[in-house]
Every structure is written in C-alpha cells, then in structure tokens.
Image (cartoon, rainbow, N blue to C red; front, side, top):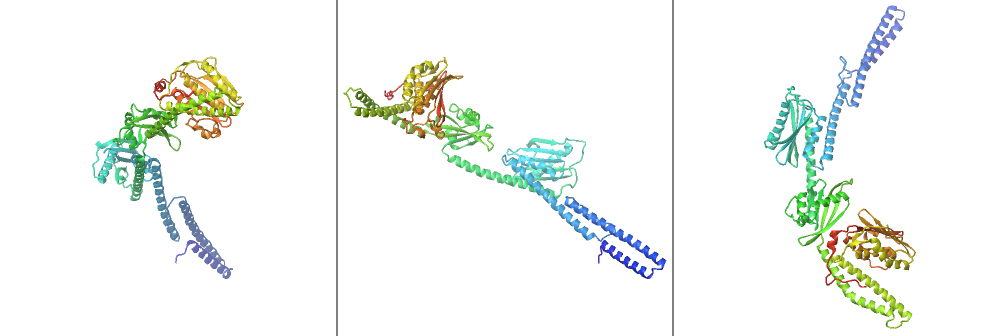
Amino acid sequence: MNISLSQKALLLCTLTLVVSGVSLIRFSTHAPVLALTLAFVVITFSLVFKMLYAAMKEIQSIARIASDISNGTYTIITPISGEETMSPMIETFNALAQRLKQHDLHLRHKSYQATVLKEISERVTTSLDENEAMEIIAGSLGRVVPYNIVSHLTLNSDGTTSLTCHMEGSVSKAFAEETKRIAFRALTAVSGATITDEQIKKTICFGAFFDDNTQNPVRSFFTLPVYVSGVLVGAITVTSSTPNLYQEEEIGVLYAVTEQTGAMLSKIKTLITEESNKIHSMLSSINEGLIMATTSQTIAIINEKAKQIIGIPHRDHPSLLDVIQALYGIFDFRGAIDRVLSSKHTELFQEFTAESNTYKITANPVKEKGGNIVGVVFVFSDVTKEKEIDRMKTEFISITSHQLRTPLSSMKWFLEMLLNNDAGEMPEKQRGIVTDVYNSNERIITLVNDLLDVSRIEAGKMQNEPTPTNLIEFLKSMLPEAELQFKKRKQLFEFHRPDTLPRVMIDPKLAWQVIQNLLSNASKYTPEGGKISLELSLQSDAILLTVADNGYGIPEFQQHRIFEKFFRADNTAKMEGTGLGMHIARQITEAIGGKIWFESSEGKGTTFYLSLPLTGDIQKQKSSVHAPDENDTMPII
C-alpha cells in the first residue's frame, strides 16, 4: 500500500504524541526518561517538517507546471530523487502536457492552413495565377519549418519555366545550385519530362546574400508538387544545411496546403469556365453587336454578331488594334473609348452603314462596385428596319400633307372671302360660326406645315443658306410680329441685348423659325399678365439667346421627352398645339450647327437656351443643303 508524504508525517506525529503522553504519565519523576522522550519528540518533528517540506516542493512544482500548461508551455516534471509518492500525479500531468502539446501543434498547423488559403483566395481568385499562389505558400513556410532556401519552380504554358528563390540565411552559390537541381529532379520524377537550365525563362532570388565562405551542403530537403485541374503547374522545394530537420508531420501539413490550393484553383477555374460558356452562349444569341474594351487597351468581350458587323467573323480573339483597323474610315473606335472615359456617361454616336444595313452605336462606361471605370461597352444595334419604317412614315406624312395642301388653301381663301363680306353681309351669328371654322382651319394648316417641315428635315431636304447675320437688327425687324401675341395676352415682354454683337453665320429664316417657336411657346404656356424675356449675350465662340418665362413650367418626370415628336406635357396637354414645335426646333438647331437646352420648374416657369456658333458648322451646312425636288412644297400661307 502506497502512503503519501503527508500521511506519513501525520502518522509519525500521532505516534510521537502517544509515546510522549505515555512517558509523561508513567515517568514524570524520572528525569533521564523525560530527557530521552523530549529528544525523541524533537527528532520526530524534524522528520515531519522535512517530509512536509518535500511534499510542498512537489505540490509547488505541479502548480508551476499547471500554470505553464495553461500558458502554453509544456514541461515534463521530474520526480524528486528518493521520493516516489507523487509519481502517479506527476505521470498524469506529464501525459496531459504531451496531449496538450500535440493538440496545440495541430491547432497551429490548422491555423496556418486557414491563413494561407485565405490569403490565396483573396489575392489569386481574380487572376488565377498559379505562380502567385506558390509564392504565397513559399513565403509562409517559415511559420512551420526552418530553412535556408525555399524555391518555387513554375511550368509555363509555352514550355519554359520560371524559378524564384528566397534565401533565409547566407549560403553559397553551390548550395543554391544544388537546390535547383533537387527541384529539377523532383519535377522530372513526377512529370516524366526532363527539365534543364535552358528552359528557365527567368530566375529571381531575394533575401540574404550569397556567401561562398559558407561551405555547408544541403543536408535536409523536401519538394511539394502543385497540381491544378490534374495538371502539374510547378513545385516548391525547401532545403536546409541542418541534417534530419524535417518531420513527416510538418511535410504533411505543407503538402495538404498545396493540395488544397490546387483544388481551390481547379474549382474556381471550372466555375469560371462554366460561367464564361454561359456568357458566351448568351452573347452569341444576342442579335446586337457587343464589344467591351478595357482601360488596359484590351478587348474583354466581343460576340459573334459584332465580329460579323465589323467584318472579322473568323477572328477568334481579336485585339483592340484588330477592331480599330476593321472600323477604320467608318467609326473612330479609339476616339470613342476616350470620349466615354472622359465624360463617364453614356454616349451616342453617328450611325454607319455596313453591308446595306444601318447600325446605331451606343457606348456605356463599365464601373466596379467602388465606382471605378474598368472599361467601355459598345452596343451595335441594327436599325435598318426602323429606318425603313421611318422613311415610309415620313413619305406617307409628306404625301398626305401635299394632298391636304390644296383643299386647305382653298378653304382658307373662301373663308376669308366670307369674313371680308365679298359674298355679301353676314349676320353676326353666322359670322361667329365662320370665324370658328376659319380658326380651326388655321390650326390644321399649322399642323400640316409642321408635318411638312418634319418630313423635309428627316429626308435631309431642309434648305440651309447661311449668311453673315446681325442678330440684333434682324430680331428688331422680326419681333413686332411676335409682340402682337404678347399684347393680345397682356404679357410683359422684355428684349435685352448688348449694343453690338459680331455677325453670326446662320440662315436667318431657319434661326427665326426656332426663335419664333420658343417665343410662341413662352406666350402660350404663360398665363395672361405673365412675363417673358429674350436676351442676347456673347459667349467665347457663340451667341447665346435666352428665352425665359414665368409660366406653367414642365413636370420634372417628363422633361426628358420635351424634344420628342407629338409630345405634350401633362399640365398643358389640353392647350392648343401640335407637339411638333420643339422637335422641329431641335432638328433645325442641330442642322445649323447650334445647341438647344432648357431649365424648368413646374409652376415657376421655363428658360430655353439657344447657342449659335459665330462661324456656323460648315460640315452641317454642306450636308443640310439640298436642291428642292418636285415633291418639295412651300408651307401654306
């Protein structure tokens, strides 16, 4: 039976007390016996103190080790010489320390794997660069094993290799060459192909310096092959001058990391390939051409329809230069990219014709989640059918307007004869009816004239004859006609202009048609007693006309439609008008090289701006001038 130190000390104390008690009772008068008893008690208590002191040391040692274990230090306890009473407890603590040490090491390895894989997933999943993944693993090996050199050899798709070495300590060049040979032998063993120095495309070494005075050879090494999608892409080789340094457990952890990295990259590549195939199928089924150019001067996406439109249907992976050359003389693709990147907004470009089809080009900036522009996507829309429909519609409107011209003119003349009493006096009741008919006829004539203007503009037959024009004098001569309408509606009209302005190269008749429309609309959509102003000012290279009113304004949600044909805003839909005036005004403005825009607030009024370049737009002037043909018709007076 094993008795602990504390039990022995207690038993000895009890025995001493019993012996002392008996001696005091029976030999209380015998001095030698009492002296002997006292000596026995002193010796006994000395032994008890020694036993208790040894037991306290054992307990303190165990307490210290327990504290070390809680702090992650796993020290083996050695029993005190000559005392085996605490051995079972010490053995238990030692076993616990060993288990905790193994568990802690396992957790550190798992933490290392998770950290490395997380870094790889964050840095490599977008580029899928196997070389970068191996670089991350090689750079992190120092957390698991010590080494002199760690290198990673990458097999490139063109048959060449790239070698990168990191030297943790100074080694000789012979040591580095041996490391390279070990990597070559390992790759040759797993791939079956011979790797030579001639295949190395580039070699990068960093870290410590070479020291040829260090003659230690390679005594420990291991190599980790890296596979992605079942294909060998490279290997990581670790070497050290310390013999028998690497254990199977550590190598197994690193092998698991490389295996999981390869599996992760394989899965991501598979997913990307599947998604790419889906996107490719989707883009191929789109009936519009689609090209995406990146800011790094590459073509990221181009579908089959786009290649067919620009004339390179058999080119598998066209470059940006291929696209620019295919569109040379038709569309400035490079300039269009710069324009969108500069404006950072959607841009519309001039239509072009290819193989008897007409295409409209729209370009949009492509932005990341953070708002950074990474490219420009171009959409080539086939508008051939829409153009044909528009042509037929315009032709129908033109023919219909021509056919209405004669009867409307006759009706106007006959009604004027009746109102002028050329057929005799009319009673007031009949005169009122005839006046209503006359006004209705005038509205129809206005609509027919607008339709004729639209058809001529869309057919490119608007006659533009620019001449140097003094706008101040020209408007002075034309404004009395418009002021009659202001006076009729009791509206205040103001004309602000500088003393002088340079002459502007415009067609006065076309310019007045736009200005008259703006003034007429300002009067029509401003209540009686309102205020209307016309202002001229000189800009850097243009004259700016500003027509402002304090009328009904345009609802904000409808402002983007103000230049559409037949559009009427909701708050003025019941008022007189055709909905063609602003469309015609914009078409004429663009034809003479100007710009027109507006600002409006519902219930507060509208301000229109008309910018006319001082030199005009020669290109537009030339393209807009056409000799009238037999179908052209002057407006009905």
